[in-house]
Image 1 (cartoon, helix red, strand yellow):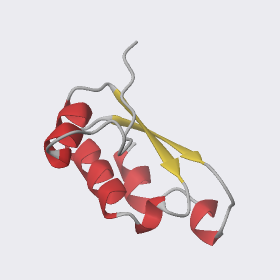
Image 2: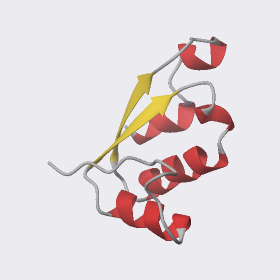
Image 3: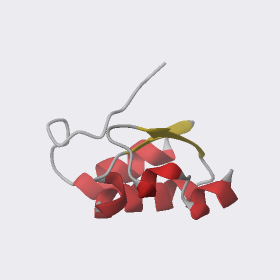
Image 4: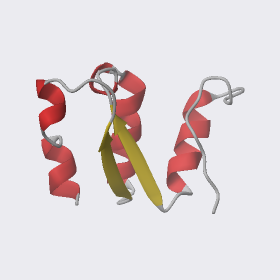
Length: 80
């Protein structure tokens, strides 16, 4: 099993190309739904691309729960 973790420490060069390649070549996307996830441009971009590529997306609530974390995003429910 190959695992790619989106970490700014691991990405060198074109971040957009690296993320796009990782998502296109994966079988499953694990979405860690933290407080920052919902505010992050890059997280939203990754989830959009995973949806367009029809990838299986597994949402996992992490960190402190807020009202945002009490439900799966609507777009994700429609995808699955």
